[in-house]
Length: 307
Ligand code: DON
Image 1: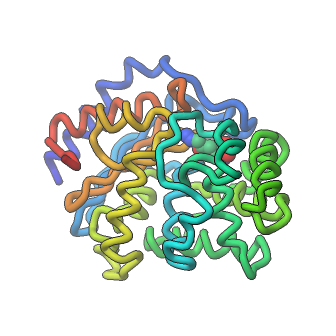
Image 2: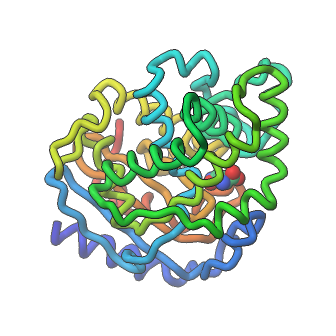
């Protein structure tokens, strides 16, 4: 781990000169306030040890990275039946695109685009009040991270609720096809709150390490998901985790990864480690620009790859 610590410190220093590139997400007003110079990397290995650098103890909005945890939870609840309501193919379209829903009967291409994650939130809402479903997602993340201090930022959730016109459109459209089973305000309430979970880079690499370790948390010894399910979630992360940038991410980084518009990325090195990076300025596809670059440099030096 000493070598790795040196590596991530070097990557951080190297990328400092590129901090003017990219653009912080501003369609969610609360996220537009974030300082684009923030930067963190955290790596958790199979022994459950974590090293980190930069603003590694600062919380950021995990946004779409929450879709990994809600997918794992929903698969645990309804099993493969989930795939009747959401696909598992890359969309080749932007994360908030509506176009495919018309031709594809309101069934989103995959659980990581907004439409797909809204369906997953609707699945988690079954038999619950929204606040119970939200609490269940938060509990899952806290168990995975072994950390009870992880919270939701209510200001970010409110900010999305007030400006999430696209998500309301997606939800209405899917409800028209019968693929949402609850009033859209309730389903979106769950979705906006899960996106507003905030974590530090350290907490995020710790929360994701079960996916690198065959579904088991190396620290608590708890099985979070089965080995087979971990493998499948990683597969969907690799093919769909960066939306229309998934192919480029796979080409450059070669690992399952999930991005969020808060500038975080969770990447999984099966059998080796989980990596969380945070840099708020995004590329044109809504994925962290320097975060991706940092991952590229890390895999180049370590040789880590899913292939
Ligand atoms: O619904 C939204 O637009 C946001 N809460 C999440 C989108 C997101 O993180 C896309 N990621 N790169």
